[in-house]
Image (tube, rainbow, N blue to C red; front, side, top):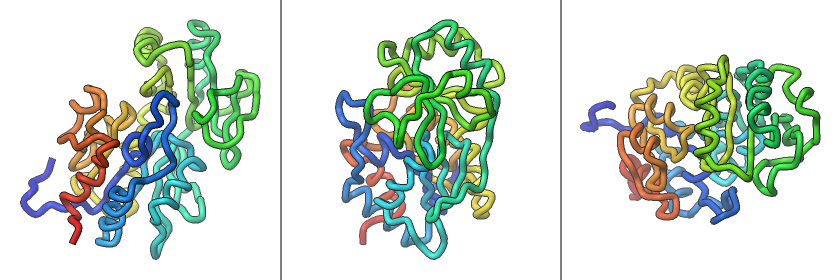
Length: 277
């Protein structure tokens, strides 16, 4: 963490769900609306010359609408980190500039041996997802194309989602810990939602790629997030800030904690460095 005497972030990395967008209670999804205070704070940082980079577990086509809500268009297309760091793209227009893939078949087969009823999804870019069975409404963006599991993981992929509406996040943490999932990194969401990714790939690795392209050091990055998939990002950034409703492992990884998403905590943190005139 850098000295705060004259520090001001050159790049602001923002999670989406639970950071920019408020959760719909009991629905497993967020309102597709950015609060005015958050929108204004992001715009102030953008207009002051900071690079605004969205960093999410969402697939690329699930992030462009949020970039539109933030009015991130400028002289050059914005940088966006999608799929928990596996995909980096510019927008608009959507142009993938970096992608990491892996062989997910061994991990998926190991999970299915223990939980044969889980839902499995792989991104079908520009369309939605290929899934073995439909996910609960609102949990995936785009269309769902029913596909046999063997075909889902026949090719290398950038990310696999494992979901079980009848289990808990703790169940999945225990499952992942027991299986080890060799050759694969994983992160468990708020519910029984498991993201499988290439080893070493996270929001931090995606942001490091963007920062290198922009000539920005990690020490000059402010990152804000609320989920377990934000931990590496918060540790990597010069200043990592957890949302107030984050679970304890996320708070422990952060340099500071702001208000909850319902209190527009992201706006509060950004305003420390880019105050309203």
